[in-house]
Length: 163
Image 1 (tube, one colour):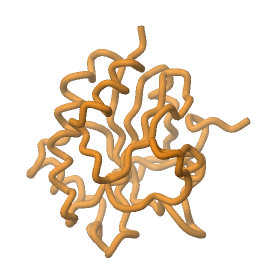
Image 2: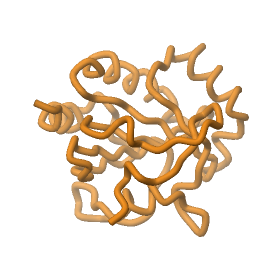
Image 3: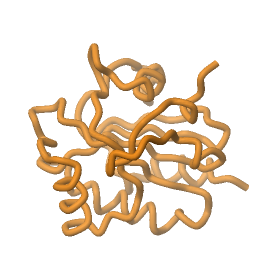
Image 4: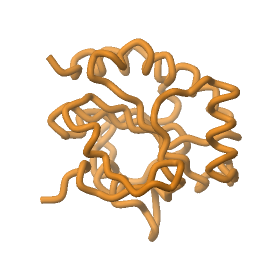
């Protein structure tokens, strides 16, 4: 069976890659956008990265322009925006589709996992979050309105940090 770690994806710089370098870590995978009302969540995502990054955790950002065209930028513009406005240090990947006919295979796997209400399926909007355990299992899904600093997110991350 193909795991999340096996699926090809380019970095924001266009370098072909996979998620293999993150195997064994707890990951918070998020579809991000620069021109969204939820864009300030970048600040809390970066705080999570700085708080837990040295404990086997990483935020992974996946720019997506599928929701009201709120991520129109080039890779260079996205990187500059994230660096200048939010001092983002967590990895960003190429701009992808998270829903629909061109849905990236990573999101094809992620969206099979239900949220706290038991609902799986399409990503609702920018900043939907998926927590992946060090084993590679997708263990939690948080809808866009659930902020990265919400107690439920923090508790789930802490419960899934590698020992």
